Length: 102
Image (cartoon, rainbow, N blue to C red; front, side, top):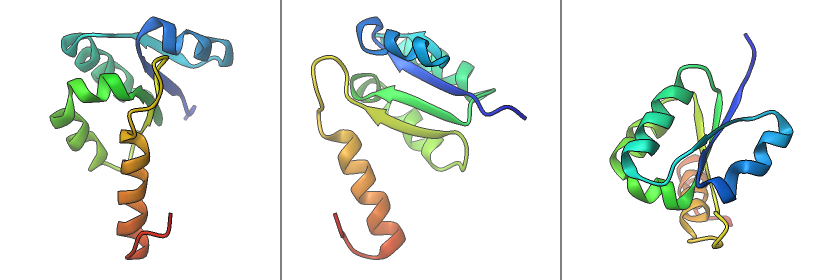
């Protein structure tokens, strides 16, 4: 099985990922983000999602994060970080270690 990486976000934020051979889906509205996520979940082991897009689908994101694969990693968009991705990493570290070590 080939491990594929997908990226979802606004065109300006995710177009550079095409240079690395990632499967890129442009999305800026809730419906587009949901469709792109469903598409990439079929054949990706890692999905990068901009924080702005994650804000549009918090319920769907929570469901996906309960699964082992694909791993969904939040990244900042061209406007900068909203701190959501960092907060998620801190929460996961706390679950694994038992305390916040970051």
